[in-house]
Image (cartoon, rainbow over all chains, first blue to last red; front, side, top):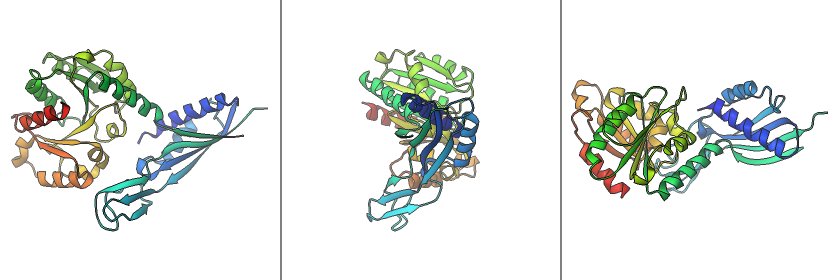
Length: 118
Length: 214
């Protein structure tokens, strides 16, 4: 995946939100990342820590919450969950390929902590 | 002070892709995002497809390459409108590049627009550009292990074109395995076997295209 592009986008969004709310400094950014997105959290953290320099997020921590891949089978109607780092193709209960993903594709900012420099 | 945000990080690309899609739909343009590894035959397939269709419908092409205009020149020789995008390093096309390039084309006159993505079996599958469908090519020389090694591309594509089938007796490659694994990843995928060199299978593919875009 494109961890550097993702880090750039997430910094853009965070800096805009911070200014929009009338604050000057970002202390932390919380993101959720589904395991089916293929995003490597170490690479994302690395890119974030390089790119944040010189921005209002310079001192910010990036808090990453990983979301497991969850799905429901259209044939046996059972739900399943996996902590593997990629998408599931097959229902673990009955082997059907007709599955609906319920979670795992998330790539969202959920919350930020901001303050004003004294 | 805590701020609640609910923004998708790749929202910007998805939003522009939706805008592109609406613009194409309003102008009556059917859009295909064509993807494959380097050298699988994207431009060759376009040459064959355009030659077969150009008396029936109006085709346009956006060419995506890291650098150079070789592919756009090949398409230009066929007398159809073409724009070359040079990504200057980026490994895929994104919605914003397509938004800019589309302005250079006479979209009102075009029925079918091909977007030839950068040759890469990984990244292009991650980015929507505003297409109606994704079509991918896998050439036999790449080997029959590719569907399971690059699953996302096969899952995202509506159509798989297996190219260079004229070489099948020379290679240790199983077309059946490619088909089986592609259908395992994506039960709905439509598969064509073609040779852009001999023309085998091209008619079946272009007939399918004509029925699907009208």
